[in-house]
Image (cartoon, rainbow, N blue to C red; front, side, top):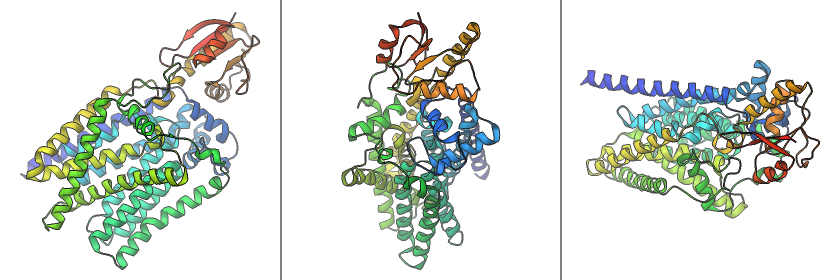
Length: 497
């Protein structure tokens, strides 16, 4: 029996390790090869060309403060390139895979469940996009996962180490929020739920008060230190991004997960819709039912004083409670404060909370003979979802910036044309202007002249036009002829007649 257990443990560890290494290599490859995107270029142009203190002076949609500061250090150490700009996300991704594997091993033990739980998070194509992109979402996601591991450790039966683990979780949550402000919702949800689970375990007393202080204090200090100045200088428009309708919010999170190969954000693509794949919606509803069923099992076992695996039970309560509190915060902030609902990447944290809540629920159902069939059904659904994720993966574009997928190739063509003519070329672009300007500046290219400001109309004085939207095509095709259409982004390079 011991040998069998050891073999299963070794196989489990090997699978998780091999998957993490393969995904990290893929992320590094994407960071090095995929074209820079509009938002990444905007971050560089606004906050990374100046002094070291620029990221801490003002907050806006382009400045994910902690990430921006780390990117400033990265390009200072290694020079400016699309890979060095993305390096903090790539390093964060490595920490994410390690933390996720440790969480799954500790909570789910050995066998198929830790592999399924890790797969439903780590193979998500939308999550993987932000592990490569130079934005704060991936880093915040990684730090949130590290906080989860610290909380999983803190919820065990070792009171001597508990303050250190609470403190480490608190710091990780604070850093996560400092990387991307929208992660304040899951950070608060996790902290409050962890405190409640701790009180349920130990009853309210001095130890519980100490735990809560360790859980809330260090993270609050971290957030205040990093964000107080930039948030104090933030314009009201910095908080206006998001969905106005709940249906659009739900669709914007589910579409890039289950329909990643058909993004709404390609040039000439359809406007964002409220369409959700029917099969995906059915699976998510079924998994939500399983979460509710598992909570009933956990509470029933507690009421009957029946033995159960405490780490799994507490983690199930932690994930389900934090998911519920996060959703409640979103709804209350919209109704009471007028904040918009999460849209797309601003709801990325849900792609950590929901899969892990589902996986822990399935594991709980597995442990009870009366609900074992439900657990098996849940495991099959998790496996199908993981396979679906693999089929939707791509190495050529980021879902929300597919329109930028061909920018680097277009810049190379413009440089080649300038070399043939022996003079810099004048280029007009609107949607792709920041990305083209990024390559023009960081590669010290004199082949492309200074780009016009946003809103400047195209005129015959330009040598080339780069059109993305249908309206841009209509304006520029009158002035020249198409010489290249990118096969991924559908962006058009037009040469003046």
